Length: 113
Length: 108
Image (cartoon, rainbow over all chains, first blue to last red; front, side, top):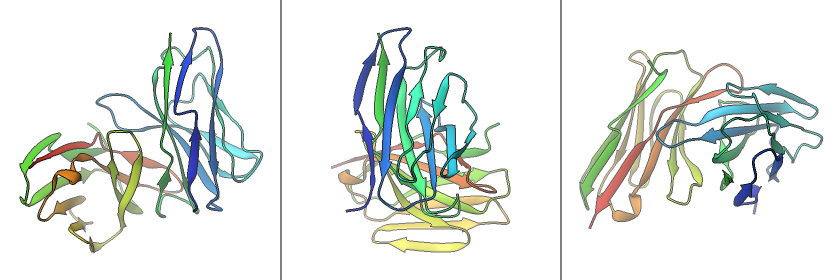
């Protein structure tokens, strides 16, 4: 079945370490997104990509980096520069843009210890 | 003020009740999405609409573009409907703006 796969589901990181969250989709979608969710807040956009080898910063990109070397993959690296990285991270994709149905992965819980 | 406002923030209902969740937005949109988030965190798309009304099973979504308002209705609610319901609006291009969500609890 087509869908979006995020891994790992749960991740613990020590302060000062970088960590990479994986997002893979087999829906043949052009657009992919990374969101962060904190308790009591709406999802906030970290980065998005509309095409391979191109991506744009979202509203809270500081301390994060991404790559889009393949259409189906959009990994997110949480760097040591991110001051408050403990959160729930969601990857999503659409065929083209926000006017199309959006599909989400199951999310990744990142805890900094 | 948030660009997308949902109400209520929390809603508790008895099984069988008719439920309405509201979403107001302040920007021009290309589409509005209703999403459902279960306790494990995964999110599924319920509806995407740009005008009128859509129905899927016991769920109905409506939108009034002039009033910048949308509602999600659940008829004959059931405990399995308990989840967070999120409204999101798509503006130009690829960006979506999300409401903070409505936590729905349906008691048996």
